[in-house]
Image (cartoon, rainbow, N blue to C red; front, side):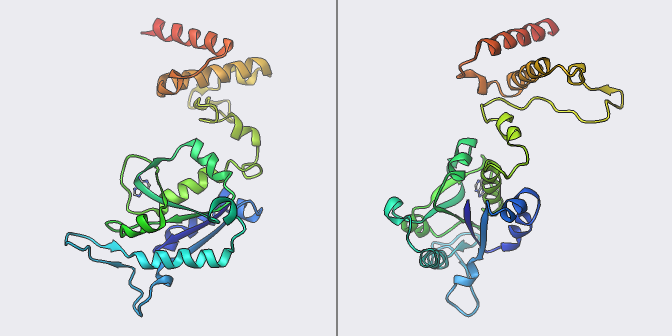
Length: 257
Ligand code: ADE
């Protein structure tokens, strides 16, 4: 995966890229990220990247020209190997609360993208609308709330996509087994010691019975989904086993109430 992050605040992004899985993915050559300071693409001596809004009002608006110039520079730098196929070598993404919701399916799509992903990070009261009309970036939202800028959403999207690349997360099975991969929430996990403050590990997990453990985990994933995110079960085709497990769960919960 190859990414570019265009931002006025590189230090909001760089430290996160230098840690943990994102760092390892880069070291292994599975992720390439460059962070560019949009101030480097301004035209004036004072490197002004924002200005007051036309028509008045509070706050500042990010200027369009530095963003256009940064994209021009990227296009020049990276040539046009994919231009024939896609019309461009770059896939422009604009993190914005107005965008298409970012989901696990979008993360998979970004992982599989052959073009360079360019995250254009907005700040202040917004970005000059001509960035939208002139560059037609895809707007993507990471949730129905408003953040101070696009840097954290860009990192969220990179993180969610990169960990789906085989070899980034240590055990590929943990990626396959986990939440949302097949739209179920995770089953509970435990580690040593067997008892913490009077709370014991479920017996089945120390039984050594692999089939019983598999079944317990499936049931607890279904239970967690049923209790916390029932919407994820609504349109799902359930296997025979899942239906039986879900019946057991429903019985257990109606007996408790
Ligand atoms: N920028 C500000 N808020 C955002 C959000 N919720 N998602 C993506 N980008 C944003």
